[in-house]
Image 1: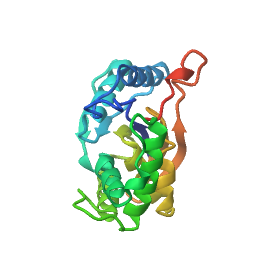
Image 2 (image 1 turned 135 degrees about the vertical axis):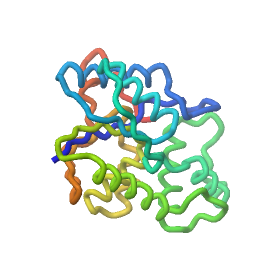
Image 3 (image 1 turned 180 degrees about the horizontal axis):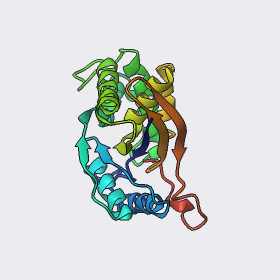
Image 4 (image 1 turned 90 degrees about the vertical axis):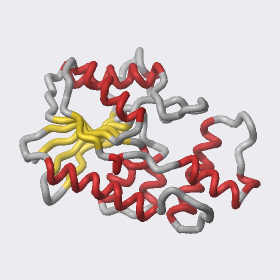
Length: 225
């Protein structure tokens, strides 16, 4: 079977005017992951990413750490859902739930978790970029593309975002929709979900691992946003 390493992007720029770019730590996390692969002599046949800047920068950092340039396969279906729009729609209906100004990232993510539940249940109003089902369908299409375009001898590294990765795993495991909401907020930056696939099936072997950060001098580099 073919082998995949599904990676969440490095730490992005939460709280800045442009979230869709890696922080200095995010760039370092990606390079460290590439170095980890290189130290184990792990070659890859392709880099598959969404088309977000943070995906592209993470893929570039992994390649830098590996010391190679991989063929790049851009799949927008791997992009994150528009979480700002989802949270804004929820808070427009429930303004009393808005985090106070200057609140921590944890307060925002609490609102996001509740907003995702309302989005899943189709109870949000307003002009949203996509429905929950549209999100699920495009992630499934990206996964089908990967299964159909790579041979059983290939090893690929895939860069995506927390929500899309959670939907990917929900579909692979045939789990409930609630799984997406729960997993989304647990996935660490540059963590790896490892597994195998062919044209018929995807099998998950590991989830949310950060072996390149799991050492005493890098524990502070384990991040979630």
